[in-house]
Length: 228
Image (cartoon, rainbow, N blue to C red; front, side, top):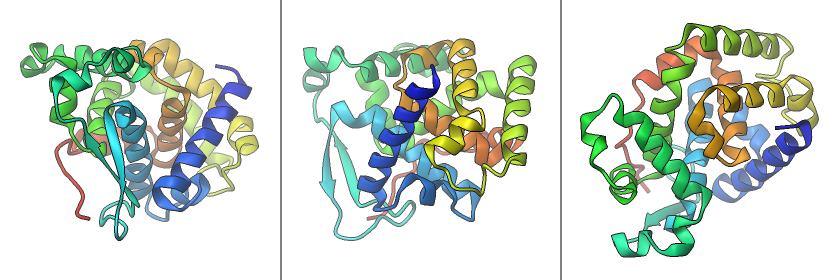
């Protein structure tokens, strides 16, 4: 992933944040509460993963937990989910890769189809919750990976990235693309993800730091819906 690809991913995530929250990515990322910022960024990952298999609907008022202005309803049947055009998406391959990753530790998941996995995740936070559980196996469980990510995020946080203007130029200049590239090269299933997903993960790590991410993701609920 080069700087230009990362910049395009940032811009794409910014457009999604504006649609979902009526706030740009800089506002979402700089929430005074780092964990709330991480939850809202994580939900954008969930939207990215769920989008081909769901229909959006406007909400009468912002949701309680993340102030989202749209909800996403998963398709109703396995046949609809497994339609050829949906199977061909990167999201379908990504969900299968996350499922395979989690199956190593969770016997329930081994016999699930990709549809079963998506049905169990159901809401946007659920999709991100499974993603976070899979990625933390590397970032939090592998000492070498953890040290590398800690080094990158510490440098970025010292430069003010956690509180400064999160323009594409600032994030790229602070090593965001390099960290994203390292993660894709190190965490096998991240190779299936769209660039905006990698960008969101990098921003979450910038806000929380590695220790904060590992603590937060360890207790992250994957079955908690929002009140609308």
